[in-house]
Image (cartoon, rainbow, N blue to C red; front, side, top):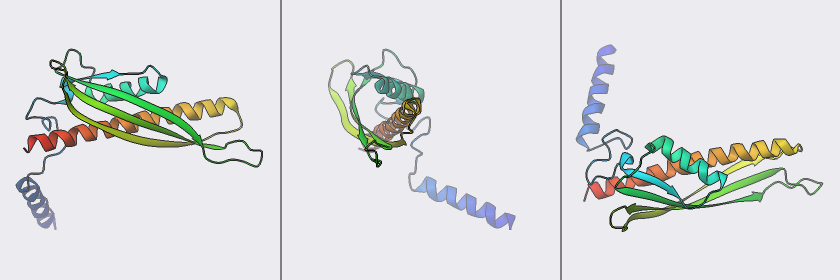
Length: 166
């Protein structure tokens, strides 16, 4: 039984390496044309709390890089929609929607290397207590910022994989 399991693992490893599989989050996954997460500085266009949370989430994932060859410019817009309306005509649930446009810019030339957008939604309940609603919204802002940061990283990694294979 142990021999079969070992043979299966070795076969899977050989198949994955033979097909050119490369993990997107590997430390050397961003080789090729010098676009790596450590070579990107994050710049936000707005100063709202949710924008700060997004920049912080990106810096947590990419590092707090300064004076790099690439700048990631981010413009985000968020809005809140009421979902569940109670009998007393008061919302009991909300959707927090964040639309984010981003551009990867060459710092020397100012040329836009890559441009895309992402959207994420976080739903939260609104208890009768005003403090509870504020806390729920703050939690939703943290979650949505984290989700948008993950999606931006995934899109940058996908872009890198496409340009590396050309």
